[in-house]
Length: 323
Image (tube, rainbow, N blue to C red; front, side, top):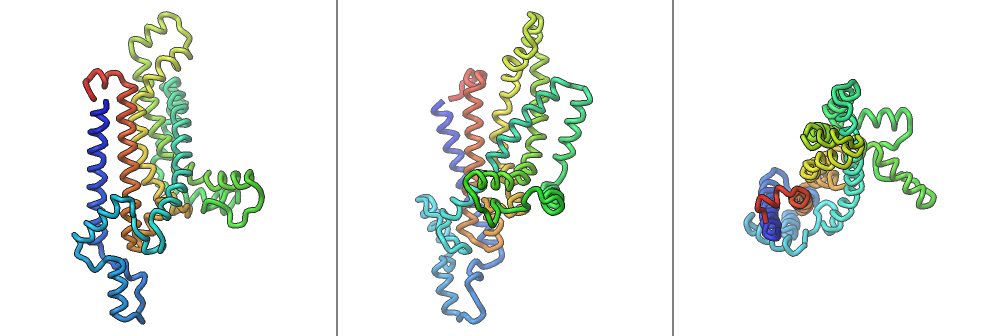
């Protein structure tokens, strides 16, 4: 097992380094000058050269890469060009804001998806099953940004029930209970829209896996012995049906991060997605590299956790001689 985890960690680090190197090359070859945010028409050429030297842009690309890699591996992400403060500070705030959104989406879609998948499997080939599949396919096919705008128009502009953006109200008075309630109101729309495609995937996955398990010989044997239906479903069938879901949950991380980029910008949610988009438009090289590092690391860790969990929950993998 230790050898298996060690190999996975090694190749994970290689993948992360490759992603960062490719990102470094692409952003430096892209058109645009990061120093342009400081340069004004009235500034003379000598001052411009000084600004570029302070930003480290006058050095050859290979030398910039070596310097950046040395600093990056020691945990120094540099200073953000656009925010004019440490990148680690910007990333820390944005990561916490994104986690508040993605963790709620992850838990919500898992609970709803498993419950709907179980219900659809139990009601296989009935109108309820067909209605659930059709409805989820419909919502899964809708563009997230379009649905977000439609729900903002309905619930925020017309009905005034929910806020249209940000994490909290501009003017907020009261104690901790009111602050928590206000945060929940701001989370409802972005969390619901971001969770819809994952609910559809989880539901379909659980439904198909549970139907496959319910057709196995040991389930028919349990029925023949007269075991209660709920005991067969929850004690024997559901446990094995959810086993493949372990791997799928790890793969949700990249899609959650990708979806949050769009949703955070629509709802002006100050998270990693919005910070990344703003950094790209501002040619903020240190911030772009740091956000890509966090995204790549999260994806790799998610897959690594899935592999390790699958190793433990599925005896067939251990019997196969891994580790």
